[in-house]
Image (cartoon, rainbow, N blue to C red; front, top):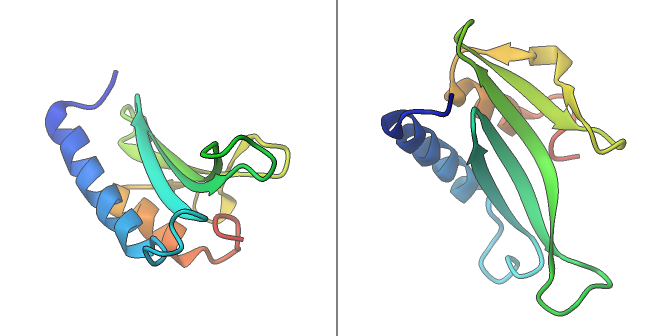
Amino acid sequence: MAFSEIEAAKIKKLVGAFIESRRPAPHIRPKLDLGFRVIGQSIEIFEIRPVWRGKPGEKHEGRVAKATYVRTIDRWRIFWMRADLKWHGYEPASEVKAVEDFLAVVDEDAHACFWG
């Protein structure tokens, strides 16, 4: 079940503000930018870069972090993208109570899993 309109708006506002605070300077954004999407019960944060050997204007999304809401336990599960290009649970803090907590974990990045 997807989020209600009110829940989705709150999530987009919180994550949008977080992304905006971490985005590089405007003159760098054509080479590196950040974005996010809400799909079903999940939030994905990603980097946007031009494809090195691609067509002009072609972009690549490098996944940074993901949180999936589990309504039955009222928790957000946190994931990071490993070198095998699969999402893996973020062990130091595998679950949090709120979106704000997820964003704090990603921002802190204590184990350099999200931002390298």
